[in-house]
Length: 226
Image (tube, rainbow, N blue to C red; front, top):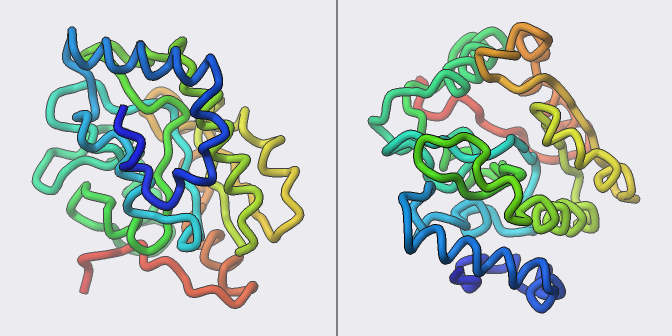
């Protein structure tokens, strides 16, 4: 793995790099990329980190693992490249956004969110083509625990949107923070679980209300809309 693409996050996470679990993680990830089709493309593995540096984080959206079908995963949780048909989970996210704000973007490329300070993180960062959650035993969860623990120490107000059971396991790490935090937990937006409480949860307006209350600029969720 090319750790330099972590950008400004690299010094905050450097204590992980020499640990045995992380060295094993690197070996497994590199071997997987070398021997099979893995998503996202290796050059986009740490896109969330490069697009949203620590000081910019205002909202964290936490999912499970990347899309496992061709041409979808791009290193940002739930995002796809512009022009790619929306996967079901993203369609449901946009449906909830539309219910919350009256409209939603037409492009599935969520990099405009990332550039505004929305850190789009999965608990597992890689997946084998066609095999959902296939890298769950690589050790990614421990690394993303370290990412969340680093976020807990950032001084700015941050909203955490924890979608699904895997994301919600990070809750204690966030609750340990002494800085202003808001946790909004909901079922995963996938078709299997979205009707169990994701729809109607209104996470986007709640996030902006928290940011505004703490003197932080809102997220423009409806990028590309008039």
